[in-house]
Length: 280
Ligand SMILES: C[S@@+](CC[C@H](N)C(=O)[O-])C[C@H]1O[C@@H](n2cnc3c(N)ncnc32)[C@H](O)[C@@H]1O
Image 1: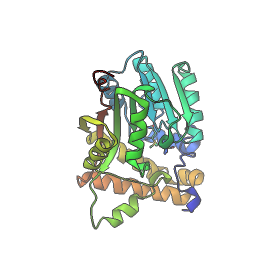
Image 2: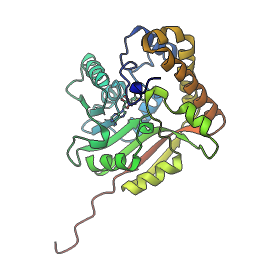
Image 3: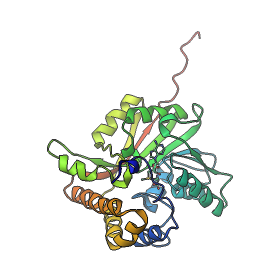
Image 4: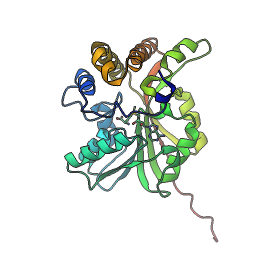
């Protein structure tokens, strides 16, 4: 793989209607389950997010790393809220805008092309922030969490869904095989690592849920899709990239089956504002 392709470049995968991407998507999801996600996210996670976070009409929601925008549009449609997606990839922002318009939701869903490490939003702009399968791209997770804390109002809620790994010494081969899936650097962390970093950034931990079975199904389907349609994907997205992803998904699946990789929803909140001391 040429070094130029490494980075947070999802441009090819985000062209949802390209021939190879249509094959991938049809192999993973039925028409009803394809909500324009670019991850292991399913409707189940989205429904649970809306319910657990109490998202409703009037809630200002931020989606960190919104991809092609499907989950943001789905949540806005289900809950009647306003959603802002922040996404670094230009194609993702364009496709997200189209999905919002197609759903008639362009007045409540917007996508901002920017780096989540430097969010172009005022302090305390959002009631809820969530992120679906994005955390592995951030080398500096405490820095990212501080950005989220800043743009949440006091008492606001932050929910991240992420793969979690328990890799240790001697796992260099596993790390190497996982290293560049999706053309991104993979900065995996464990559940314990996420908890520590959220606390360090100033969050209070509220709730953790582990999802294994449907996550495993999703990882397996992505791998099967790449294997089944390898030639068509390679023709469009490059042979090396395609072969690499087959290794990536196989390795991920093997780690899940060994109990060393999983998928956690971690909910934390920004502490409510301290009352001003008397006399001030
Ligand atoms: C696995 S996709 C998940 C997309 C979406 N959350 C979903 O579930 O469909 C990860 C996304 O994070 C985006 N991303 C990577 N680094 C980012 C950054 N620094 N700021 C904002 N988005 C970023 C990528 O471009 C990609 O669209």
